[in-house]
Length: 116
Image 1: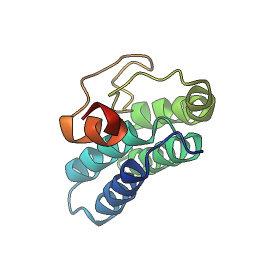
Image 2 (image 1 turned 135 degrees about the vertical axis):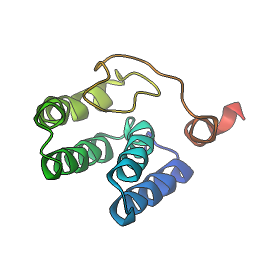
Image 3 (image 1 turned 180 degrees about the vertical axis):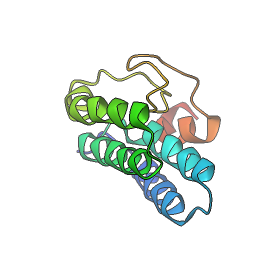
Image 4 (image 1 turned 30 degrees about the horizontal axis):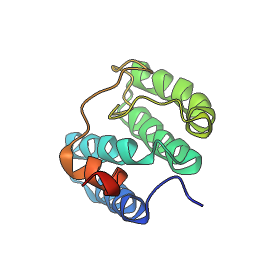
């Protein structure tokens, strides 16, 4: 059984597609951050999201972000498997690895469908 409800998985894919299609880097990051929030319960999606973030950081020549993403790529799958990830965390290097953040209501409803 998947740890990620199917509606959240679908939205994750939509956010990743929107990130690839975005015209500006700011829009790419916004979609990747939303995808990250959704991906955290799933080790493969979570790692894939950080790989995409790493790729964008490299394209922007942002060494701090790229290094932060390398650390997160290494930690993503184990954290997801252990269920030890900070809810709502956007996954960027400027945010602490264990810092919980408010989850946008639309994403929270997808992650916790029984709470709605």
